[in-house]
Amino acid sequence: MKPDGLAVEIRARSHWEATDLGLALVQAHWRSLYSAWLAILLPVIFLEAALLWLLSDYEESWPYIPILSWWLKPLYDRVLLHVLSRAVFGVKANWRDVLRALPRLLLHSGLFRALTIGRLSTRRSFRLPVWQLEGVSGKTRKQRFCALWGHGAARLFFLCIHLELILFLGIPGLLYLLLPTEFAPSLEFIWDDSQTSPWFFAIQILAGLLAMSIIEPFYVAAGFMLYLNRRTEIEGWDIELGFRTLAARLNAQQAAP
Image 1: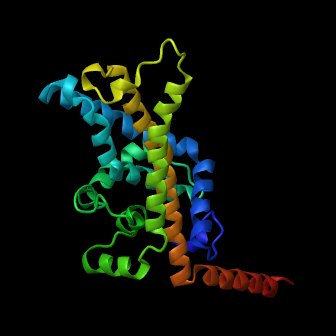
Image 2: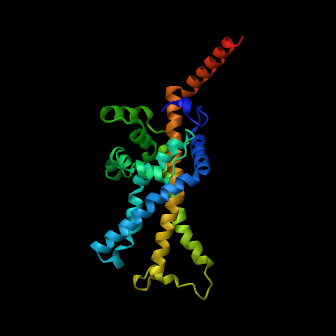
Image 3: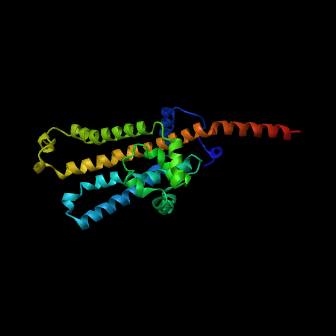
């Protein structure tokens, strides 16, 4: 990754500034991000539903769909980073580009580790660019993790998980408050499983998927910006670009008649 090709301003930022830059990146490229997000999320949900239908009692197991979808976040993260890593260079990647890159993202980005022992890592979004973009392995990758470390990544993780939880609980609550009184069910169904309506589970599943879809692109983008910011700090990207600009200016002055 060469800093002179980046479409974002290269300078050392605070953790909060880098996080805010990630939000701005999502706002600027939301069409590409969400087309890629849906291109991978919807087939995964369909596959989960089909497997549950074939392997178990679907009426009892279909609530596991949001749990499986949540656990597969590292897969979606790689798709999002594929789009973001091109967006910072001014290149738009659509869902077709993502599908073409999917085999590489599945096999050569540490996905198995991310879905197992690294699934609950608080620095997942920060370490992802090292796995996916730098192409290093073994001892070199460990050294990169130690060098970059991930300042602000754990804070970002807990911020996003709380925002996602607020949305997951708040969306069904808001829908319940908007129901007319005569149609609102008794609150007893929350504790009494025998009275629980399938519609309640459906709303919970949709709320979970919607909360994840809103927060996860921001989480990946903010982690990516923290990664770029950390590399700027330790590798002096801003100083390097400043010298290159100065050299280009001096060369232009010398070439002028």
